[in-house]
Length: 441
Image (cartoon, rainbow, N blue to C red; front, side, top):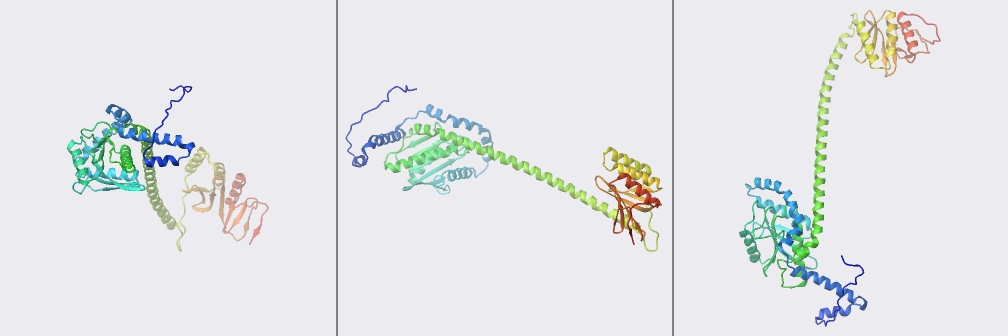
């Protein structure tokens, strides 16, 4: 670490500028900005020279690319399985071209990529890079999707294709294996006629493909701006790759986040599908229960219609529920802590004392019978039991403290259980209770 108290090393530069363009540019600079602007320009030029002249050792390049290459091991098993199944497919090359084309189109929307592999002497993809105000530049992309190392003959064919077409820039990508003769994660070849980038083991996620394509486009842009005949030598990528390695790491992190989000979407889809299946099963159950209810209702209606009095026939008599069954129902209500059990027990006592019997309905209501004829029935809520008597006389006497007249019925309210039971007993035995009443013709 540099001592903060140590003076910054400097260098005084006093030279004569003979290049007219540079001399004119320097004259136009304000005096107070001259030193800073010249230093910035020298720094940029120094970076370009490092890019063009730097020598990249294989071991050092391998160290920079280790974070990328190590992650490729995780995909090895899946990739081998895909390749084993795909070996029998005649469209293997087309699959690789489709993968690369889509990734390039997504990563470089301002540029164009077209598959031309069906044309003799052409690489797989024709790329055209938009360089802004500078002329559009053409390049070729060759894609290999092999389960084994790509042989050197394929690399030589790619070089011949570049020479034959006159295209000065090319990118050869092997998605799943190494390129014979190419060491390290990325290799740039300059023949004087063309500049070619070779990318082995690029993977299927598109991260290293995007970085290599960005490197090729940067070289093309540099050549276009400098208008130089020089080509970037094979070893000119070390420092540039070092500077963008952090960005590659960030891109890979984003890819992992996208994969995690995709997995969460798939899990949500599976859960939703299960819930919909459960709802469908529930609907099927309801449908079956509805059929059963309709069938039971049909039988019940038939029985009710049969029981209706026919013309000039004696009405059918109803059979009361056995006494022990009624008592069992009262015990069931007691165990269930039903709030109406006290009212039903007191009503049962009043009905029995009056010499009447009970018929239990399926809906939990009671019908009060005498010799098979219904004299009254209950109307229940969750907390109360009322008793309803049909109006059989033209003269109606009501105990207005507990009874009310409702069309063709008299309703004895169960709000006061003892008063209800007493009044029901009086009506069943025909006893007149002196009370405040109103008379109605």
